[in-house]
Length: 66
Image (cartoon, rainbow, N blue to C red; front, side, top):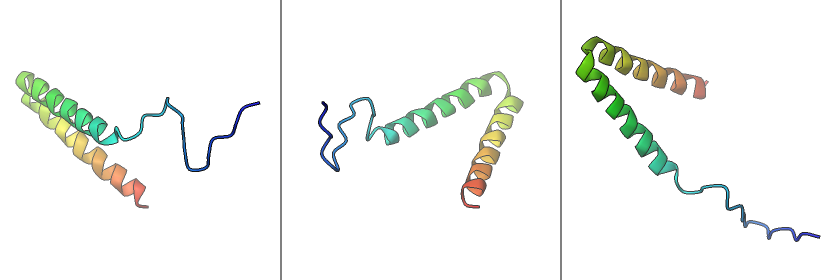
């Protein structure tokens, strides 16, 4: 028979805790690298991607606060 974990202590080693800030920084860095790489090829596509990011952020904020 298994023992129940003590209340308030989560011992699940498969769940990464405290990495959220680093993940956001990495995703933001990848987005900037993507925009820079596409910008070297086509200025119009770069503007379209930036516009899509801003519209997405606005819509996400709007739907979260409804």
